[in-house]
Length: 324
Ligand code: NAI
Image (cartoon, rainbow, N blue to C red; front, side, top):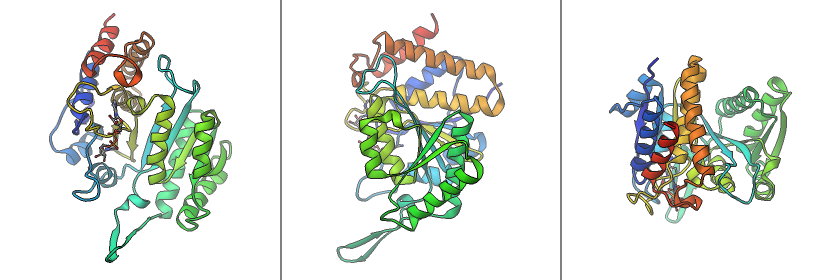
């Protein structure tokens, strides 16, 4: 079977890391295609692999990333964070999935200048989106045999918006998924617990802004942004992208670790395999995963992980392992 997906290289280190992924995919027999019109293409093909896109700070155009998620209603962001053999970090047994609401909260982009020197940013919480992401997180957890969901919140202060988020999560737990353990964690204490002992957490459910921050924090537990993949999932369409941004500080220097993008690509392969019950495609994903795992264990790593390989050389090392 042939499945088409959209590849969005992004900018900064985006073209380098997506090129590395495209080459590894081709070597694994899971070729990608590059159509032109982004949204229409994704609507047509349903799956996209996206490189990071820069968003100017404090002015300029609004985030392309946020717009893409909202336009396509990719309401569930999934960011798995796992310890990797060959990547030594403070903790050895991290295995957390961060599920982030992707369409509202403070990322609704509703900001107003009330008067000179007074700004408001509006946090939007709708029952529909809160319940939808709670159901998504519990279903995702249940299908993967995960045991517990921890909802990170600040409902002690934002009693209405975070209060609604919590109420929806609690109701979905009690009415639909009582077999999965459930806890409510005030986010500041949750951050402390995460860096003290991440093994306490299984699936973390957050609204938009908290999920953005918590996924980078979790990335830091397992080796950083170079090893943390992600998916933005809606009912019909899904866009897969690394948690990291366009890293302008290292762009164009063959320094970026393409692994987070590659892992995002493997998430896409698994997602398509699940939808189409395609075992040979799933096997291609497993071959890629085995190849990058063994490369890391053998010390074939990029600079961010203490290795010496460039973006291209790391991709070459993975391709070489797949042809062994
Ligand atoms: P960033 O993730 O681009 O970089 C943070 C730090 O991590 C930098 O020191 C960078 O060199 C390093 N890093 C990131 N990815 C790496 C990789 N694959 N290999 C090795 N090192 C890596 O975050 P930053 O600097 O806050 O954002 C830069 C731009 O990216 C901003 O315009 C931001 O809006 C955008 N951004 C885009 C995202 C997306 O497209 N989904 C997500 C996050 C940020």
